[in-house]
Amino acid sequence: MKCYFCAFETETGVLVCSACSRDIVAPASVIAERDDLVRKLASAREELLRTKEEIKALTRRGEGGEG
Ligand SMILES: [Zn+2]
Image 1 (cartoon, rainbow, N blue to C red):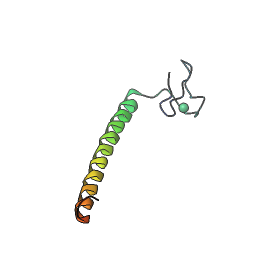
Image 2: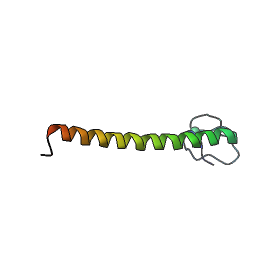
Image 3: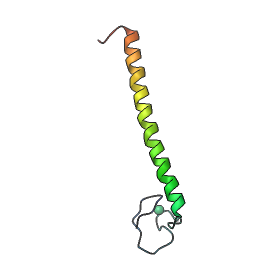
Image 4: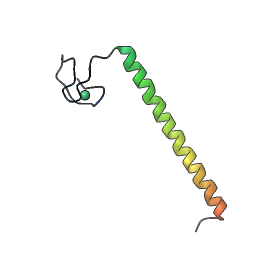
């Protein structure tokens, strides 16, 4: 199985990751919470990209067109 923290491939049955020394056996609720955070992070990144593009478009308009 893979470590949830560093993605190190550990032997099945071990309780602690040999790479980062963290507990591998995580409760399902923690894993669900982590998945939710990953999804939120992805959508936040998309929004940030959209905003950056908007700013770029606005800045270009302010400069008086493309060169
Ligand atoms: Zn690890």
